[in-house]
Structures are given as C-alpha cells and as structure tokens.
Image (tube, rainbow, N blue to C red; front, side):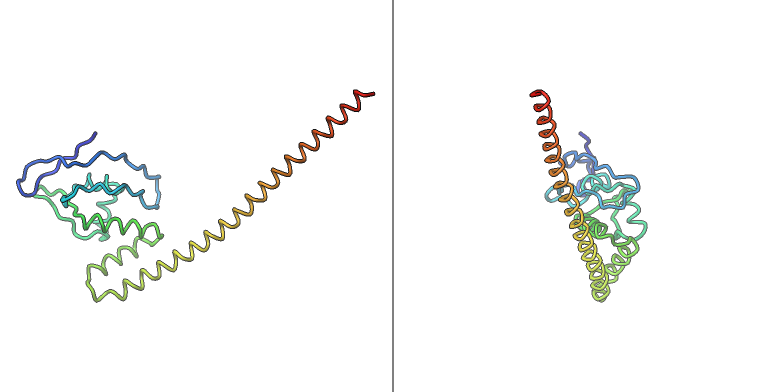
Amino acid sequence: MTVLETTDPITNTPTAPAVPDVPEVPAAAGSCSAPQQQPDRRPDGHDRYTISEVVVFTGLTAHTLRWYERIGLMPHIDRSHTGQRRYSNRDLDWLDFVGKLRLTGMPVADMVRYAELVRDGDHTYGERFELLESTRRAVQDRITELQDTLAVLDRKISFYAEADLDAGLVRQVREDVREGVREMERAR
C-alpha cells in the first residue's frame, strides 16, 4: 500500500491521510475520453490534497492536472509553504465537472472559455448558458445518432440470429434426409 505524506496546515507536522490505495485506471494512449471516475474517497473534514491524492481521486495523471492549470482550465491552485500544489474539495468538484464536459465531447478551447467566464463573474451567466446549451444540443444530437445506430445493429443481430436458426434447421433437415437415404440403402 502506498502512503501519501501530507503536512497538517495547523501544526505543520507530517501526516498520513486515511486514504486507501486505489488502483490506477490505465488511460488508453492518446485517448480523449474522460477518465473513469473513482469512488469518492475524500476523508471527512479534509480539504487540502496533494497532486498525488488528486490523481487517486480523479484518475487523471499529474501531467494532465498541471496542464489544466497551465492552460487556464483550473483556477489558481493554492501552494504549500514548500511550493507543492494543494487542491481543495472545490477544486475536486470542478475537476469532476470538467470530466463531464469532456464526456460531452466539448472542445478543450470551449472548456477553457467556460472556465474564463466563471472567473469573470456573474455577469457572464448568459454566455455560460449559451455555451452549455449548445453543448447540450450537440449531446442530444449524438444520442439520437447513437440510438439510430443501435437500431441498425439490433436489426442486423436479429437477422443473423434468425439466419443462424434457419441454417440450423436446414442442417437438421439435410441430416434427416441423409439418414433416410442411408436407411433406404441398407434396406436394399
């Protein structure tokens, strides 16, 4: 079991959080899909996480977390007195939301734009609404497209299931005919 060491912000002493080791979720090379969500294992009353702990919670890589910060997709991340990133529960909630946006297929540039709008304040609600509404329409279109595709697959599967059943009956009839021919030949 891997133990991640953290520093208690009040006493400034090293502590080991009660976070069980969660297996890494392997990401496909070059995959654009959202990481598989891990069960929420945030300790109660704990609101300061190292990048290693966030990797465990989210399934994202440390490289991805740093990249999100660099491109402006993540808000300012607090730092410890030694310069290590310290993520909050609010940051983890944001990462969960970003994961959902990734699943919609929203381009990274649009996600960054949305993050900028959030940081700009309440007066951007209209733009945020439009961006999310546009994404929702695209998701609905994709769902419709996938439902149509599923219907085609179901028809093909049904066709092959019936063809296999028919082929099985034909094989049985052929076998019955052959057996009948053999019996007639024996009877001669």
